[in-house]
Amino acid sequence: MSVRTRFAPSPTGYLHIGGVRTALFNWLFARHHGGQFLLRVDDTDEERNLAAALQPILRGFRWLGLDWDEGPEVDGPYAPYFQSQRGDRYRAAVDQLLAIGAAYRDFATTDEIQAEREQAQREKKRFLYSRRWMAETEGEVASFEAEGRRAVVRLRMPREGVCVFRDLVRGDVEFGWALEQDHVIQRADGTCLYHLASAVDDHDFAITHVIRAVEHLSNTPRQIFITTALGYEPPVFAHLPYVAAPGSSEKLSKRKLAKYLQHREFRQVYDHGAAIAEQIGLPVMPETFSPVVVDFYREVGYEPDALVNYLLLLGWSLDDHTETFSTEEMIRHFSLDRVNRSEASFDPQKLLAFQERRMQALTLDERVARVVPYLERAGLVGRPPTDAQRMRTRQVVLAAGDRIKVAGDVLGYLEFFQGDGDIAYDDKAFNKRLRKDGVEPLLRRFQDRLGVVNPFDTATLEDAMRTFVETEGIKIGQIVHSVRVAVTGKAVGFGLFDGLAILGRDACVARIDRALKRLAE
Image (cartoon, rainbow, N blue to C red):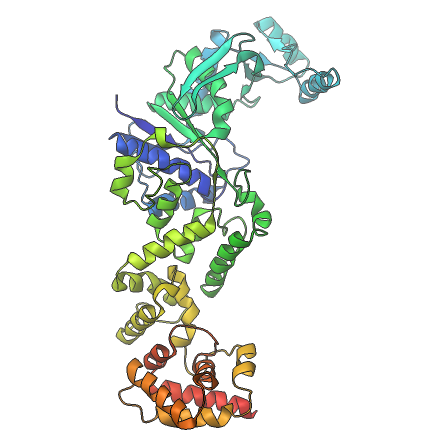
């Protein structure tokens, strides 16, 4: 039997970190066993579906390298892979369940169901629908319809016994049938709901293993009931621990961004990304730009394999020390028996650490290739860059070293790509470092010294500064900070002498001139 797994996103929003972790585990399990991984679009909820939401989901999968063997834009022998296109198949399954008595037409109104629920609450009893408005014969159907009622179709769940199944993560799981409600599987308008559609699709697509988040565990009995009532063999189930919010045990949610921003480390990652987004003109909206969704990391310049590597370790481990895996190693080592049962807390700073290690493992040429698109989007270099612009980019990336944690961090060095008259001064740094007694004449004399430095490279500039300090009889701190602010506009950055060498003599002299003129204003 060939292993076949699936991931079934709903096009209701951007790709969620927790959902991607589930998809990754499905993908790895299938690849480990030489099987197939499918994408199926669960779009039965027409009110919540967003036509534009599917493409970001597919784009996210492609970026992460999670290819699918069957599904949207790939097709396959079981097409279509959209639930919205399989209505006839679901209605046929409903008719079959009705015919064997595993489901029934129910004519209760919403108010009547609610009244029964409230009555149970008053009596301190567990609510269990009475089936009072169940129609078992055509005569009963006609009678209810004559009252102007419309029917839904409900499962006729067992009222005694237990449902027992083996879960590959949680072991033997048992649910009492008496705890199950008669779930609606078809609306009054004839459209079918998730539980039925999912069970039918898993059979029709020959899914062997359903690997999903633990919040779906309670859905399993009703889906097993549907599957077995239709005469199908149930798949093997595995329910993964959910991904928890930072510093919490509650499930990570796209709708709670405002709450997560109160968490210091989460806020730092968000602000870091938002600063990059602002510079490239990317809208920063909660539903699309959040560390909870995959697109956030793609847009600001994370490496996809860093994110995949981190997600692998959210609820899974090989041993107590291995944290870095190639894709081939992930596939070779992955097994469900190494999945933890407890929730896995999402740690954005740990993810950033994975990203830093991955970024620094790239060659210089690879890092340059990563950052150039951000300079292009910010309008700092041409499309494509000139040879001079590409050389400047290479110099900046080399000098910045591990300061460039994500590709978008190159935009923290605008001063090396702007005209001499375009750099912006940090007012606080300018006032602190340049508006001090004695700084102006020192800066003028050092400007003169720069005019004769030859060659204009890092080592020679450092020697020139050392000689200047000795000649002036001052401490280096009395001049080095003012020079940095004058030529870059900022108080911090990578090595000053690297920066001066990259900018070149003419730019350095011109920028110091501009700073001196500002001092005189």
